[in-house]
Length: 557
Image 1 (cartoon, one colour):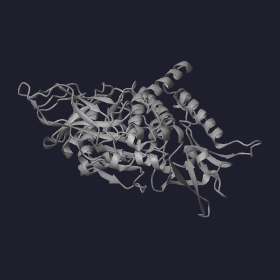
Image 2 (cartoon, helix red, strand yellow):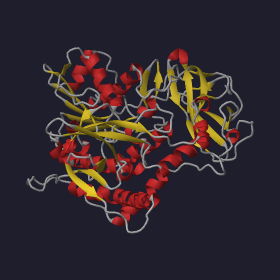
Image 3 (tube, helix red, strand yellow):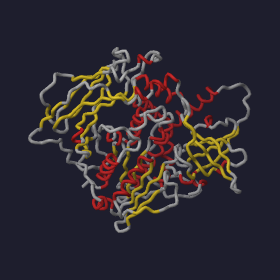
């Protein structure tokens, strides 16, 4: 698809100001524009979702009714509440006063027992302390708690309740019999979270991108691009590109001689220095993602009625089922869902039987590409088709002609950190969804999040608004279409891609699709339940279980 079909290009030229105007004022104006845009985006996009090109009449398509402006203001208020995190009071300038993984402690809430009952709960109390051993008086730390049985390859995430006074209540469900142990890890101190919150609040981006323009003679010019025109390095003249379906904007500095519509390539640019030396110390490796000293001896969980495992619910895995916490657990390296009766697809024949006659459209980041790669590698007869595309952005396709299976993956559009890739290959997810007829043989999988942690949440909110409207329209015209949302997984621990950012992204993902009949694959919990090192691209064990959950929704019985 040519760029001209995807984008409307403009040249923006700013005249010199009559009076001095500093960057802060311009950023404030842009900030207000983004807030207003996020509030009205969903309403506008509901109207636009079936109106892609005013010059070509299209048959009317059903779409949700537009909500009133009052309800949108309420939604914005709910969004603020959704992203609430306990503040870090005080200066925060003393590193020794920040939460320490070496001195923080945890212990059982009640007296220790000789054994515990399968299906019950274990409770513990965590006391956060600073580097001098003093108890903290406020919350806001990002801890991770797990209950593990390494010899059984079993694990489940614990629930952490922040009492906002330096104390945390930990609760673990006892879901398998045998010896189990508690593990608690400090991902980020509350002071480090304060740094990350400041970046989200004060920085319009922490990275930039490169745009490649090419003329008819092959001459190329390279410029900086980003989500905000003030971040392109050219305040007086920029090109901007508008997504016709969602209204999202992308900006590039205007090339010296070439026109705006000669943009042909896109790639990552630079990571910006957005932290001070003190902030870097709070995010340093020696205080980030570290285990606390063992505070609870291993305990024994006894069998119940000769059962050694809590059985998954009997209801089939279907879109719209409630998502409990935790959503599941591992036992013998197999994920057991606590929301539905998940199935195992351990052989190529079982995968083929499930996907027979289906077209699967995967759209998102490289963690979702791992699903495509896993299916390709697991099923020998699923043959990749060489589309002569850039592999890391796609599009990729594999087919199994005897079973009528087609498997697609493609990256979402900018912002996308990638090697150089053709702009024409970066399709809008909303537009791709708008081009699907849908039906019982159509499966859509969306995986978003990792490439949005380098921007304030308003950028992701606007992206979600467009995609949500497109999903709603797809399900309205063909309700038997299966739509699966893959939540973002754990991984990065830096100012550019922290688990704290990812946690907020997942909150937004769940909220955006909560009232639609879609299925969720909780990659966050599936990558934080075992005692494995975090990787932005999880290993095969994790990916296999993620795909099993996905296929359980495709073939629930």
